[in-house]
Amino acid sequence: MATPLDDYPYHQAPMFMDQVVSSDRNFYDRYYFNGFTRDGETMIMSGFGVYPNLGVVDAFFCVRIGERQWTVRMSDAYDGARDTKVGPFRIEVVEPLQTLRIVSDTDAEGIGVDITWHGAFPVVDEAPHQWRNNGRLILDAQRFAQVGSWSGEIRVDGRTIELDPNEWTGTRDRSWGIRPVGESEPAGRWGEESDPNYGFWWTYLPFRFDDFTVVVIAQEDGAGLRTLNDAVRVWAPDHERGHELLGFPEFTYTYRSGTREVERVEVTLRDRDGSPMTMVAESLGHIALNAGPGYGGDPDWGHGQWRGRNWVSGVEVNVTDPEVVGRHAFGVNDHVGRAVLTEADGTTHEGWGLLEHGCIGAHAPSGFADFFSVAP
Image 1 (cartoon, rainbow, N blue to C red):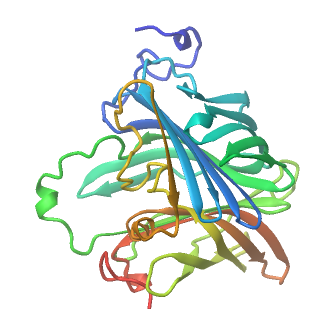
Image 2: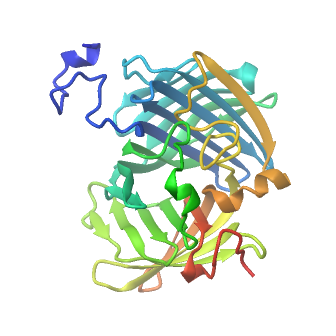
């Protein structure tokens, strides 16, 4: 049926705006944000998603201070309005592609929020992302990313944290399309005839430097075959170098012995004339994505799952708890990253950003033969 959005000339198909072209249950439309102090002591993360074919809208906000991590989650029925709010949580698009505000009146559940995002550089259009598993297209999405800073305040654990944009940096992205969401689908044949060499290796590195932003993305299977590759450097709009492709990145990860917990990664890139560049990023702490925020097999809640109307919940964990640590090898984790980029002429740049990595199952280039292999 017609909604207020149908009065605007935004249509891309002969359908009402509360409908989507795909009938795939996994269609989604999502915001993602993170932020952190440059010492990595405090990190925040938030997301908001609409799942029209599941009839669900949800959001979360997460804060980690030291080893303690708090998350509030909100979920409700999707009514087709396409506004950016769910229960006590809302996102205000103050200036598209530049300034956004997040408000969450959830102090009673553990976290209260009123913060504003300020983009530092233009958004970066990422390469379209497709992924097939057992021949089926399970991910078909478009995304853009941005680095920036934060202002405002967060209330958690009886304290108020003021976010100074000179001290708080972060990254965000918008994505939409198809990806696994909601309740798990029946495994069917593949539950009995799974690939013993299955592997999912993922790297996502959006970093902010003084004069430019760098975004590196790569996905590989268990044999190391790369199925997604994107590496760019974007300068300020008035800079003569504009938008640079950085070639086919090569990665060397260092994991904590006996685990798959990331300590650092060295990335070899190529500038416009083919000269080598290196970016070395180290982890300064992380948020456990599958221990509250709803990612990667979180046993408590997942994005798009139906929890009834007006559902609000809060949870606190310790990221060093063995139960939480034990999930690392089966999901993706988001780290505060400090990076040093070295140009071919030896010039160095220091930056901060998101070090997002997951290595699940086999990955031959890393020496992991199966789900239970760990670093020596």
